[in-house]
Length: 628
Ligand code: GLC
Image (cartoon, rainbow, N blue to C red; front, side):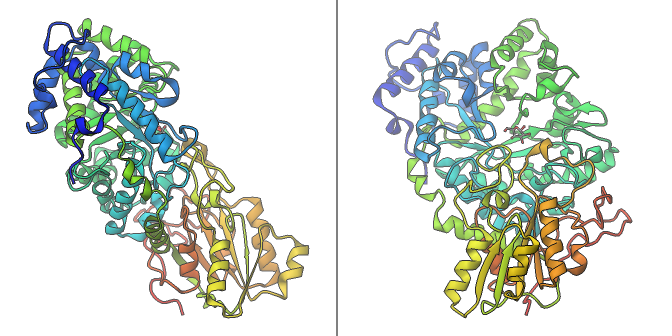
């Protein structure tokens, strides 16, 4: 369904102001509004081909317009006046950056205010609003929080992942935002990397198979529906291949390795018409990607034919040299390398000044500036942003909807990987069950990083269902005489009380939330003391135990895999924990298989299929089909 015409969706004053500015742009002075034009300038005519609209608009733009379009600032460091004065092309929410109250209404009001400010610029070019909706619209309170990519990789279900993209797009567009910095198409090759959970897995073919999420976000045609949003393939390139799994480190690769392991997902993303590609902070063979003409222009744009726009990462141009604070030379190098939109959350004035000087002094050709603008404006026209720049508030009802939560629950169930089972699964609802462990009743741990805040946090951070709550509900609904008791942290005393009263324990153990470099574990990934004590107590008490691991990656279980009666990789399921109990109680047969090789110990890193090592569980391992 096409979006309502631009004029029909804006207050008359805004339309007149826009018309006036369009007239002014046709005249000699692009700053002094004059009487509204008798007809819209070609770039405002949606019946014209996009490339004609782009060329008409570009011809009307002065250098300030063009450099403004290439500038992206963070919402918390600007006002609406900044958008107008600097003619910004984009605004973003950094991790956890939300209006207060954090409601769809408040987001849409904020977004519309920024668009109204953009309409006051000489040519009235709407902004793009970008956000990290990486597992649902995870910054928005009440949104459906889907499994992180590592769990989606375990589903090996591209059609499901495309539906998740579409559902996420609806909950993003409901706030007005029209661009998600997702999917991460990193191929995670070392589990010590803090962003492993943002990867669909270690296998390039598996990661490539998940790229239909791009069509989920964008739709079959960008702008083809009110919920269509720009997708971003990130982080180009080889962010998951750094030595030691160091986030923002250096990937030492032959050209053949780069092309065989890290490039395939981008070929598929370009084939899917991904609108933008974000540059990795990391380096390839010692060269920072943000400054690499070889990677961003020669390879990505020229050889692979990427025709969307390249966006930098957060102050990424600042990392080109080894010193804090970006310099004139870094700006020149980044733009000449092929970056089109620059994420300068707070330093946008400096960026604009440096780039303006660089163009005036001939260090950056106007042809490069025009290329960047053509790429950005093409996506804005394709998205339909000029015709309908304001939030579509009818989508607010999709936020956290029963339909979306059911989809998330299905994805959670399909992401569960049952690695071992001695027959303890499926658990009968006639039995007496103890639910314990750090993740048993903690939505924050269940969701992981990039949830409400950048790093995420343990605790009751989102609306959803924990494993404990889901088990209690399932037992109550079954009314089969079974019971559920819980003890988050087991002690010898508490265990003594319950030992004779339970038939089986579900121990949900694993990681607490983190994001990016905060999740790097250079010494290997292990369970924390909290969970180790719980598992030891269960083992010593001889209680039949199902261990469910909430983690962003395979982790060293301290030998639990040797004695546990069943072992399930649960990953980071998000809001719908009932998808886990659906498998544990036999309501859904497991189908998930490992997206990563599971190491025999924390020291066995990196380990990947085909490298000659023997993992604890192979890539692709998992019991599939009925458990009983
Ligand atoms: C972060 C991440 C990137 C994210 C961006 C905006 O540093 O590297 O994945 O999209 O900044 O939040």
